[in-house]
Image (cartoon, rainbow, N blue to C red):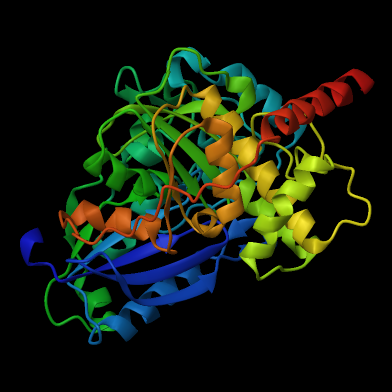
Length: 468
């Protein structure tokens, strides 16, 4: 198989909850030189809402085929969203559809699962809504569809399913197992006791390193793509951990990484693992090296999309920045949660304050403040210290960055571009691009009243709690 030092271009299959893409990255610079994107569709028919696996596979094959000659690629890596497992039958086909993690289960099934799951002290995995705990997904599938589940022979984490489709090699991997699944014990570096209560330990594929090359693309698939030489496929990684990986390689602890997409996920490298509060969506993720990392999150990208659809687009970032001071002075604010079911303030419901006759720019400024306050709360929960690296779409939101820097008194360093997860996944192949895309620290904006605004924000939430 090709040595990593000779790789020139890496193809990355990058499947997010909302969108999927195939990206070609230059191995020397890390720059995106080609990309194709599609919507990650959830099908509502059948047993339960599930991902359109056939459409995703067709998109991947067609994209790789279109890139096979120009610009070409000589290795493939994979990154996907978390909270998904794939159940295969004896023939290696889907025994059950790949469940959408936002699907809610009957109350009696959820209650039965609560009695089975391991304690937080074992897994550092909080009880989350729907199927955000993969253990809850598997329990639901086993309980509700016993006939189909009886055909399951192999359980794979989601990035590794796509590696299996390409190579025929079945594997699981730590970053996806350690992503609030209830299935992993980070302290022991092994599966949790839940596997025995679910009777699935023997179904789990072998655990491999994210950095392992599982094998070349299967001959039949290679022919469909048009590959002339063997192309290695790497095991793959959970998307937020892909965003974290470049920082683990390049920086010394302590520091924080805020990975933004559908979810805003905060990592505190060198943070506090002993005082995590599972009721506030704080947990331990497991990094690509198998180490537990204090983490917290909220559905910030989804919330931003929902709010922007209501407010309308404001293309001029400068006008939003200029509106920050006005919004702070008049106490216009947005209280959590826009998207229910996750985040540091469970049970709260979205409410606007002092927003009469607000302009779109002011509303977007208030949204940026809201997102910064939510991020600061997440970082505080996990004991984050040192500089804060922002990856993903929020790296282009200067108002958000300025507010976060002011709230945390930390340097906020933006890493713009849409390929943060893809670039991290490419590192699994052993390449080490020299190009640094960081900009920052964030330009300072004088926000002298922000501390008072923050106090008012928390006070308003407390008043909501008292009222209910």
